[in-house]
Length: 64
Image (tube, rainbow, N blue to C red; front, side, top):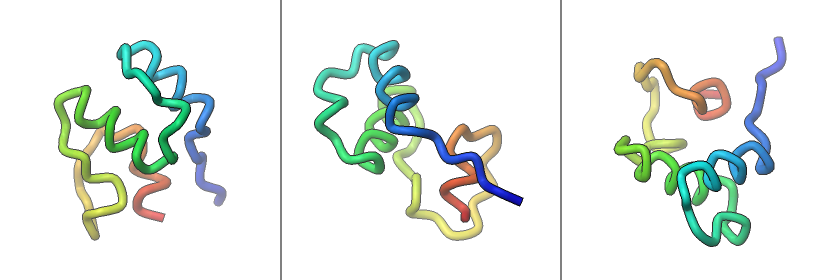
């Protein structure tokens, strides 16, 4: 079973929709954290083992 990873292009599009400036210059993980914070969530991507937060756009890749 393959994991659907979110692409940098998809993240940049999401960042643009959220009016995040300088998104293209951020590394993927930094961008995900910035998006999470902008949306009012914890910037938890890759930081929590055995995460049970759902729904989460990044869950499949984060918990891989």
